[in-house]
Length: 171
Image (cartoon, rainbow, N blue to C red; front, top):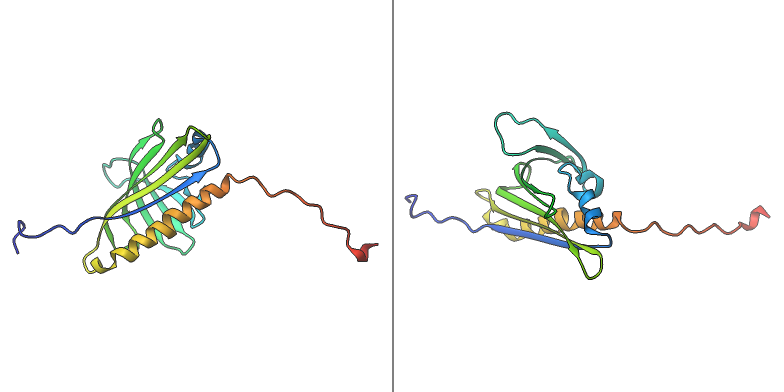
């Protein structure tokens, strides 16, 4: 099959969003740092900057998950005024190629809340084309939605302190 006859496999997509009970600037302050994921994503335990081996576009981060999986990602774009950044996954355990994601924080002006979106497009590695639906669901639910729920949780007020009733035996 010649190069002209070969058809490109369609790109897969994963998307999740969350309404946050805090102003957009406060939410962006929490998520806008490229290394901030361990502060709010329950599945990420560490994020460390990595030095580029050569010329590169943006900073690199090495993420480690609670399961011990490691991802190497490069920031492609950063726009603090639009409250968004984009990155690509360079290495990781997922059978993907050309994985590019964007995280965006948008104010809900009518209520003072914040709408956060996390979106990715990617192709599947050769031999994994039949796993597109399952992989899209895993990225959407376990990576993006789980992280956004964790982010929303960081803005919930602490539960009210209720004093414990006197125990009968103490009397």
